[in-house]
Image 1 (spheres, rainbow, N blue to C red):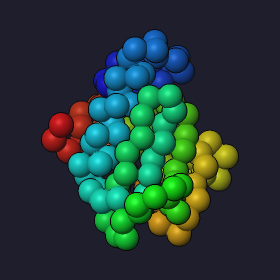
Image 2: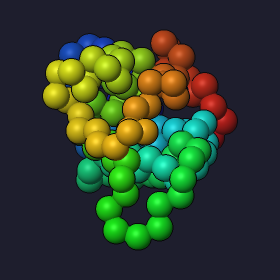
Image 3: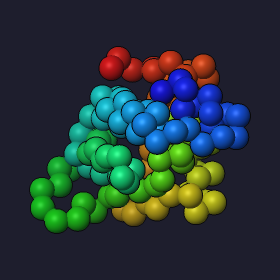
Length: 118
């Protein structure tokens, strides 16, 4: 994960396996930090989690969905960009009243260490 963040900070794209591993660790960290089933966060093609406390979704497309590219998700999770900035720039799609992760981000320290236990 630290390698992916360092690459992004250097203006580079991490290799595929590094990016995939970082996204998966960060998605798990998000689910651990904000447990629940109200919001589905999708980072194709690497993964998706349901998180944030509230009404539980059971069938079909969830009413609260956030989707973004892997580089955007890592930048959000590492605090390199805010949720509002990414949304305003069209770097993520968010639908539903609860589809905002502002209070749950960042997931890492500025150095790239997780703020929640793995």
